[in-house]
Image (cartoon, rainbow, N blue to C red; front, side, top):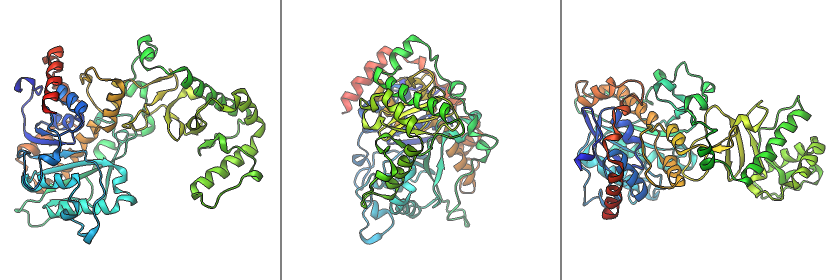
Length: 473
């Protein structure tokens, strides 16, 4: 399959891409001069897209490829992976590698133990370092230290919207935790056990996240295109929901010009007089708080709210989640000026500067001005994928799901670069890996443009991908 390679510049280091998805890490490390020598991804559709774009068919179940008796992962310089977070056994409270047994992180640890890559870069959702997963977090850090790696206990949280656009940032608020572990050299006698997080000041300084502009910085496709509106426009029902709440916003502004629309979630079903509100003792405090606030809001604006509800048949045709509304757009005057998320918890509106995080379920952001969802191509741009990236013939929902699961290319690129700078004392400065990564520009897109998707014959390669995936699975 060497004819499928699309890297057109010299390779300086090797990497393996675990839980690879559609290849966010691959894009970042290839742009830094790396060559992927192994990838794993159990999802057939994601593997199909990965092969189409990166020229490598990911292996399947990593638990069968890397364990105590089998090690099918080749030697490599860098190990990366967006691994799933699983609860670890607390029996014995070993707080180390033995406690990871039976989890996917244990398989990662087996690879690290056998291959000793110079750099390990792992990514996960922010909650992995939160109170609910405190035990898992300590186990992961202790395990990496047991294996001989320098790594900080402090979570390293990065979002693409924090990064200056000239440095590969994108207008998406997407907090993710990165674990940056570097192999400790035996020739280094003194080193910090806890080195702190890598320094990203060079790429986030002099940047105000309020300056993002989706239309210009993403950029948005021509939103008035009839083809785009046909594919990504809203249903009549969705438009009705937004029309109703837009009338609420504009009407509130008109009737109460000195007031702000509340920032707490508005629950229509909780709009009852405060004196009639009965709170069950079993309710959690946060819910009691919201019920009280909604009741008081109703008391203070009863005439306007009742009139608005009558005009929309008391929202009786709205599902429960669309009878809830969260306004996070400060002083904007209309929904048309916002970006909208139809969430299970309600309709949320934010300023159309940067988008909420893409998620791996159907909650695609909606552009209030044009009343359409972000296109797949726009969602790919949010994640830093280049314009040539091809999703083949799969459904839009499948592509959104894959992008929601993906690692942001710009963030991964800059985090790995910062990791090398932080741990330069553990690395050989003359090493090709170090020279390649540090000589790469502070921009995650330049080198990706040197890939040439047109070197493929699209029709024939699509058939090859399909046949290969079927053959492997």
